[in-house]
Length: 138
Image (cartoon, rainbow, N blue to C red; front, top):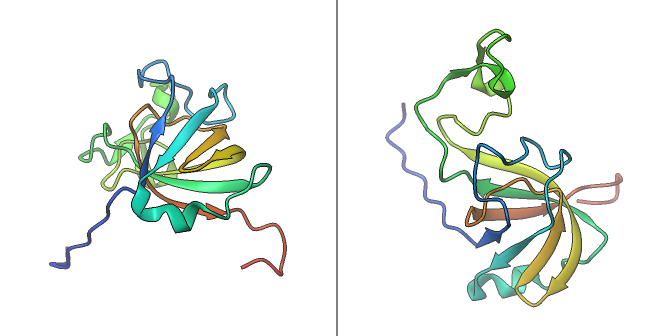
């Protein structure tokens, strides 16, 4: 491994009714409730152009995940063969970064209401990027 150190800091956090990893949906389109992305004041200029009705990719730090897991049974199903985590969507992995495709429902200052986010309440938000819909979008 490299001696280079990388630093990330949260730009916000998730506010969600989801608090228990055992009962939370595994993917956002599997019944995730609407939730909020709550941004820090320092990133207010970055939030200003987010618009309801668009889709975005939310990057999170899965702060309750284990970092020592390299193989899992997909979806926790022990009847399935053990698989390397890089071939799964398991939250448990060396760098527990979450990637979530969400729909923006409302923007209220530093709060953005979203659909299809399966992240737990309090999960740190690292970044938000638009979903590109055509060749002219960059």
